[in-house]
Length: 338
Image (cartoon, rainbow, N blue to C red; front, top):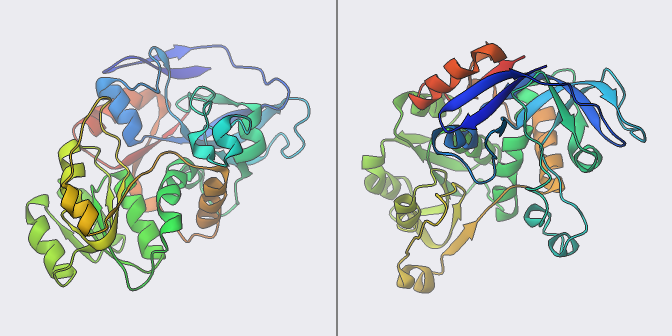
C-alpha cells in the first residue's frame, strides 16, 4: 500500500509498505478520507515529540472496514466507520481516577498513518472510539471526529450559554472549530487571527465579530461593554499570547489554554490578575471516550457542520503539494483521498 512517511522536518516520502494484518480485536480500515491539521503542520515544520520520525504520518481519518480480527462483533467488513487515533488503557493510575485523557499509556499506544491507503486500528481503540459513519455524513466530515473531540473536551464542562461572550484567539482549524461549538451553545463570539481569508471564513461560520490582532484591546472592550470576555480560548500556542490572554477576560472569567507551546516554553502571568480577579486559568489536552461520543453526536446530527473548513481535496500522491500550501498559510484543512 502507499503510505506517507514523515522522514524528517520538511520532508515527506511516499513509500510502498506492506498492508498490515489485523490481530484479535483489531480492524483494518481502507482510508477514504484523511485531514491535515495544525499538529501535522507543526511536526512537518519543526518536528513533534509525539510524532516519531521517520514514521507514518497523519491521524484524522475515516474509511471502510476491509478486514477484522477475531472477537470483533461490533463491526463487519464493509462498514463505513469514523474513529480517533487513541483510547485510554483503563488500567493506569489516571484511568482509575477517570482522567482518561491523561492516561499514562495513551500517547504510546496511539495509531498514526492516516495518510495511507489502509490503517490498522488497535483493539483498545476499536472497543472505545470507533463508530459507524452515518450515511448522510461524507467521509471528509467524518474525519473531523478527532479534532472536534479535542475541542469538546476543553469546552463541555464550562456551561457556556446564550448570555456569554467568547473570545477565540487564533482563526486556524482548531480556532474555527471552537467558534462552531461556541455558536452551537448560543454564545456571542469574537475571533482574531492574522489571515484575512480565515477571518472571512469565520464570519461565514457565524462569528459576531472578527478583527486583526492589532485591534484586540479596543475590540474586546467594545464588544463586552468594557469588562472583558466571559471565556477565552487561546488556540495559537504562542507563549506571549498565552500571557496576554488573561488581559482580555473579565473578573471571574475563564481562560482556556488550548494551543500547545514548544517544549520547554516558560510563561508568566500577573499574580494580582489571577488572584484578586479570580481568573480561572486552564490547560486542556486530548479527549476522553465521553468527549468522542459527544463529538460523534454533534457531527451525526449536523449540530456542527465543518464542511467550510475543508479548503480542498487532493489525492494522497499530492501530499507534498498540500503541505507546501499549508506552509504558505494557504487554506485551512485539506482532505486527502488515497
